[in-house]
Image (cartoon, rainbow, N blue to C red; front, top):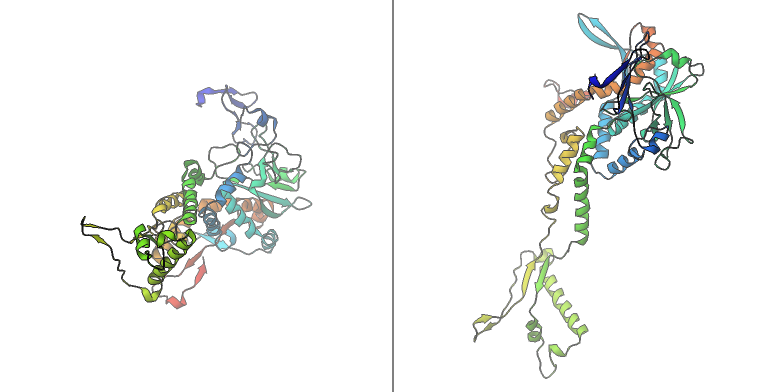
Length: 454
């Protein structure tokens, strides 16, 4: 939709499109508000609902969780990414210029420490990181004191329990609905808990203090062009079909192992052999006179003798000699015993040749180098490489994830302003994750090296 399609209405301070899917409002006040696109949907059931559906049937998180649970790579990789982002905990302080260089000065404040302890903030950051990497949608909740002068705790609500209220006519989302059974009644909010939403662009602290609620949701996500719920980048492996390929390989291998013939040899015995071994004589009428049960018994005895000859360590390397008959008249050999090895299709991984490729696609979509996780999954099982390579790769990985770190800690920055911590120190406090680095200087002996925080 081009700008030429917009129709301006200066009196109402509204910009809207003529028949397009979106309406754009630009509120002109003493404090200009950001432009918010509004979604339109023609679905009758959806239009009657107050809930903004997450997925076609409002069950996208449940569907995605089932897809994830069926993968041997995604759950542990998401957990790894969340732990890597969290480092070894949170620190806070302020930046100042010392000798013309910007320096971060960490501090310890009793009030902030009490808040972090009461909130169990490490649980918040770990859960928030998990939801960010999994869904690209995080629902942090603030709890205010009775007099609403302070935020006293923060937690991350379960993302799959949260749904946004539809936008108002100005494009703002005012409430978040929280309940556990959206897939059963996707439009029903009668059993949901309603929590108002903080406008993350205005950060209007006074409006919150004067509001009626003691709880607020602070929405977090990385924009991907969606109105309500953003999509994680790695979701492409589901849409592309690579996750189905990865899941099909172990399912196929399991079925193959279940149905695989475990015998090592197929022994072919010509029919005449039994007549030759049990001929007619004065004591017997020969092989043809035996009952079926007797024939089966005699064949089992012969097979047992053969297996005893081949099996066991003491028989390793033995040779097998088989006689065969020769017809002098026709100059042809009679068929003799034939021992045929049974081909084991599992021994060389013939049926898992796509495993490495599928695993590579998944890890690439998850933006996680296989070397950081150890041996690469799949047929090749390549190692993680040298320690120095892994260390440099880890440092590079953490640098690239810095924007995610800032996003997870954004609510704490807001709380610092709301609770007056910034005013207390006369500047904006910065929250960040501490990272651990391994000393590897040549002059430091290996036994004296230790993990330190920087």
